[in-house]
Length: 400
Image (tube, rainbow, N blue to C red; front, side, top):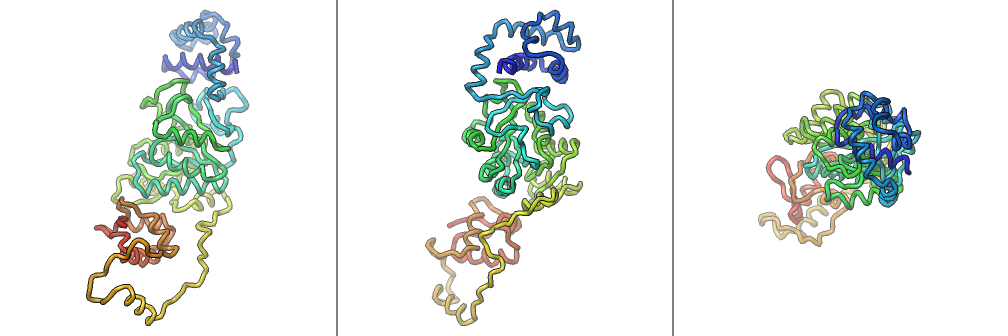
């Protein structure tokens, strides 16, 4: 741990210069931590002439005022591990990208060298709507249940829901932060971060020095790690030129597979996925669209439903009697059925997907995994029950 603590101190000095980080790997490969800790400034400057003088000045000054045992204790107390580019534990898949981080900080149970063969990143907007959030959580859950590790950025919106979904399965998730590993950003995701760290196969990583604030430029920079750890990246909802959009562009530069979830054509959050669909991204409507790309065994979606079960038919006389029992006459307005109405399995499933936020029938069909032709009569019954209401533009809201 002493060796790693030394590099953490140097890295903090490097942050303050904010220049020439690419040279850090050169230093890592050519000097040990102990040599670094004891060498005079003049010797370091002579051995690494390309490193700015201010970096060595900052490091030597920091070194003189640092009790290394306290740094070691801090790392141990907070269960922080440090992976150096020169170490065999450094994830091999990251070595393949342009400008891999020289130093990675990690917390959690999952060792990065033990990442499963298939990892998929899920990215999207921080301001996603109900449809996008539902899709992200579903994909995260189904990927993890298919033994695929989910990579994302611990941000609000799509990232958070993808992580939450992944925690429901055995494969777990990796969160790549845009701040120091000893911080959580945003604060509202503190409980989520703790859940990730508690998962048997969950971890949080960061390339930024200890104590680093979540600066704006950190996030586009860390996106190359999100895509770099994965074999493919799924974009759920994102505006053009958003952070998630930039992640996909980075993934393409890295030679990664790109998947995109379609959305409503008039929704600005659909612009990003639709742009990449036009450029050749794979249309994704379920986890199986991703799995088949890697010859992975497909999942059985909604195993609790027997899709081959015979449909119960109702005779005209039975149907008429049922209507007469519910309504006194055809001429009077149809009253809302009380909330204690007994819903069948399909009606319950559809109702669970509808909230006070308007949702289109196309979005509902995706969330419910139900053809629109099958969905329409279910929605009609829910309207009769007084549980949902149709809005302009074939959108529905929950009112009961």
